[in-house]
Amino acid sequence: MKVKLNKKLILKVSKILFAVLVVVFLVWYFWKNWDEFSEKIANVDIGIFVLSMLFYFVYKFTLASLWHYITKINNCAIGYEKAVTSYLYSILGKYIPGKVFMLAARLTYYKEEEAPLPKVTVCFFIENVCTLLGAAMLFIVSLFFFPNELLENYKWITVALIVAFFVCIHPKIINFFLGIIGKLFKKDLKIPMKYSQMLKVVLLFIGNWLIVGTGFFILVQSIYPSIELSQMLFCAGIWGISAIMGILAIFAPSGLGVREGIIVAGLMMIMPEGDAMVISVVSRLWQTIPELALVVLAFIWSRIRKMSKIKLRKQEEPQETAEKAE
Image (cartoon, rainbow, N blue to C red):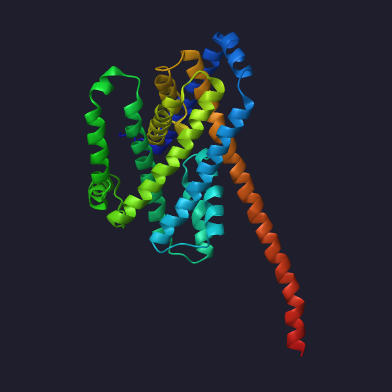
């Protein structure tokens, strides 16, 4: 008798077990080194930390604008205000198992405006691809600033990677590899964009990654003030590669543990392990607080808009009744 394995259930259980192991490890590590960590956390420069968080707010809001721009290119855009609200509200999907909510939350707004939903779904896919590409380029550029003699002697490889990057973002090349992935998952994956459009969008995403990378450097500075300004792009690159691996690690919910591990490994090249560990954990709060705050703001704004529409409709009803009576 053959036993049919439930792949979704196995993946879900694996995610839970992985998350539990990560939390247990962090609790054990901080308990073991509590005296050192409590002192570091107590000495965090709150002003600089808040400034770094403002950069993350700008990063997420700019991402919402980029989302709207992608939908405009693909002829399925709605009003800017609604597009941004739908994007910010969909952030909550990161914290819900399955992440289907991220797309579903946006489709709800686009359905109200009778936008072509298949195109909106394709735009969601393009956004995720461009997010990974933007982070990848940030990491490649950061290789110039890695405190490693091997990379210092082989900078020509980094230059070659940059050239290869701009060649490989051509839609024909991307669609070739997406076709292979699509056959494995039995889905039609394709980016319907010209190279000029793709290049512009990717450059905008790279610019936005520079914003969040700068914010991460300022966060590092609030905890480890000895860091030099020349190491800003190095820190930005560490954040970029940690984000990429966190997204690709489907077994880790929201990249938990994977991101933190890469941040620690990278920052240990320029600072003590204790400081790197504190930064990796604080960075999770650094991104979670603004994201949840933006979700709340999007919800409040949508409620205000809805109430104002109801109020306006009630004001128009007596006027329409009077006109009919005449």
